[in-house]
Length: 66
Image (cartoon, rainbow, N blue to C red):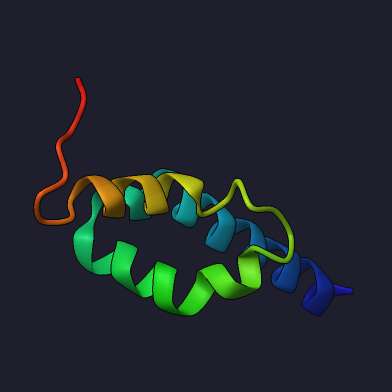
């Protein structure tokens, strides 16, 4: 019982960090896009959408809209 609650809490934390913090931290964003997003995309495409948007906006030659 405790192990299952711990696993659910860790997964929830991973999703929240991926949606709220990772898009705005370049090193963490790169790790998420490379490592975590392939697995999180199986749950929902929306989890990594903000990180992908920010990565595209930070690409060389990309213009950022206000």
